[in-house]
Each structure stands twice: as C-alpha cells, then as structure tokens.
Amino acid sequence: AQLPAANPWWQGTVGDLPNAINACTRCPLHENATQAVPGEGPPSADLMIVGEQPGDQEDLIGRPFVGPAGQLFDQLAAEVGLSRTTAYVTNAVKHFKFTAKGRRRLHQRPNGAEIAHCQVWLRAELEQVQPKLILALGVTATEALLGSGEDILRRRGSIEYRADGQPVLITLHPSYILRLPDPTLRARAIENLRADLRLVDGWLA
Ligand code: URA
Figure 1: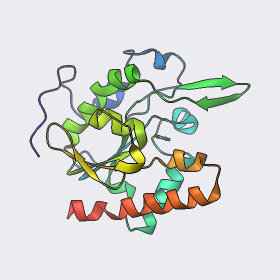
Figure 2: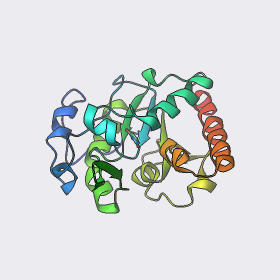
Figure 3: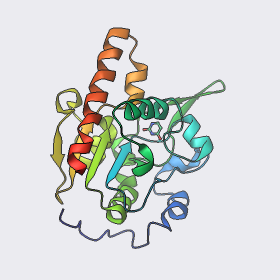
Figure 4: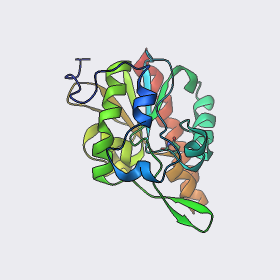
C-alpha cells in the first residue's frame, strides 16, 4: 500500500505513543476518563483491529477490548482461527465517553468532532504499524477510517479503501451485537461477525 502522507501533528515513534496519547487534551473527553487507552500489539502487525472507544473496564484497566465486547470478539475470532495477539488492537477514540447514572457509567457514542480530534492518534498508529489490512468494528471505526459510518449493515463484509490505498474490512461491533435485545437478531449478527472474521486470513495471505 502507498504510504500515507506525513502526519502533520505527530512525528514520534510507536514506543512514545502511549504516553503521548495519555497526555492528550485535544478534546474534552480526557476530563472525565480515568486514563487514555492506547492501542496495543506487535508494532509491525499485518492486521490492525479498530474499535470505537474504550468501555468502562478498558477505561479502568487501560487496555483495549478487555471487557464484554472484547470477550465476544476473542471467542468468535478463536472460532475462526484468528488470534488477536498477532494483531494491533486500537480504538478510533482513545478516551471513554459516558454519562453517569448513579454509580453506573453508561457508554455514549463519540461525536464527529471527538472522532476528528482523535484522528491524530489513529493516523499515527496506522503510519507506525502499516498493516496489510484494517478491520473496522462498527460505525465509529468505519467513520474514522473511511469518512462515513453510514449504512454499515449493507457495507459489512466488504472491503473499502482509504485514500492512501489501505484496505479496510468493515464489520459489526461486538458491543452493538451485545446490545441487540432480540435473540434471533443477535444470533444472526454473531453469525455475520463470524463470517466477516473468516475473510481476514485471505487478505493477509
Ligand atoms: N468497545 C470498543 O470499541 N473498544 C474497546 O476497547 C472496548 C469496547
């Protein structure tokens, strides 16, 4: 893939990224989050997995996809022979966005400005890792990577290309699946995510 243009905001290395991301105040989300959650994984991974933003547990622990969504993802990935330890795993937005309801912290979807401010970091990660394939989990990741997250149910399972030529495989977000109240729809969505994960190997071969 063609190299992306130099990042105008960040010229560090992948090793500096966690500290730099943690110090970020580009948008107000850092004010209420416990900490930023940078990506993790081999710095030269062939696959980059991009989620939406850290959830409650990720915010507390400081690592991506360690809560229920990550567990569903890991289970389905294992079923198709994909191990997340060989991938670089990150999120479009690095701080947890929530509203407090009593002692619970309820997830809120990041808005366009928050996604745009966090592009600095996603772009830095993409430049450092230069994956062969990016897996976009859900609407926010798809918006951050491709400019629009609309119509995801029709676009899932297909590859679209970033302006620099990097291929992005679009799929559903495991949190979206966990929130589906109808068991039949949930089972169908799980089947779809599993089918999309099966496509990854072909792109990495
Ligand atoms: N959902 C995400 O999008 N990312 C995480 O890290 C956890 C939950």
